[in-house]
Length: 226
Ligand code: CA
Image 1: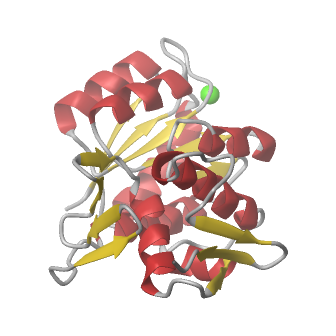
Image 2: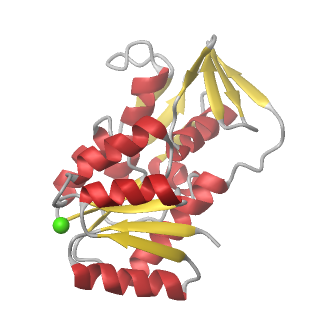
C-alpha cells in the first residue's frame, strides 16, 4: 500500500482529501503544522507528500526544502494562486506538481496517482544514454556529469530521457507532459516550462545560455544534435 502524507492546516480540507485518498486505497497520515509534518515525514517516509504552502509552525516552502535536502520524495504543493505555484516550481524547490485551491478531491487523487506512476516508472531496461557530457542511467534513474551525480526530480528525469531519445526532434509541451505521466490541466504549459527551467539549471553549464536543451519558440523543446 502506498502512503501519502498530508500537511495542511485547514482541518476540513485535510479531512475530505484524506477520505478520498483512503477510498482510493492509500494509507494516509496528516499533520496540521509544518514542523509536525516534517517530523512525520522523517518517521513514516511516505511515498508522496501533499504540502500546503501557508502553514503554522514552519512554512510550506521550508518544509519542502528540508525534505529535498534529504530525499526525492515526490511533493505536490497545495496553493491558492497559480502565479505563486509557478514560482514554487520555478524556484530551486523542485516540487513535482501543484494543485491550486479550490480543488476537487478527485483531482487530488488523479494527480497523486500520476505523480506516483511517474516516480515509480523506474522498471526500465538496464541501459545508459550518453548525451554530450551527460550519462543517463535508465536503470538507477541517475544522471552523471563525469563523476558528479545530478539530483533530478522524477519529472525532470522523464523529460531528459524523452528529449534524449531522439536528439534534434522537437517535442511539444503536451508530449513532455504525457511522458511524465502528467495530467493536462489549466496552466500545464507553464508547469512544463518551469520543469525545463529546473532541468536546465542542473544539466546546463550555463542555464541562461542553454547548449543542450533548446527552446523551439511556440512549439516546445528539443535536445541539440551534436
Ligand atoms: Ca494553509
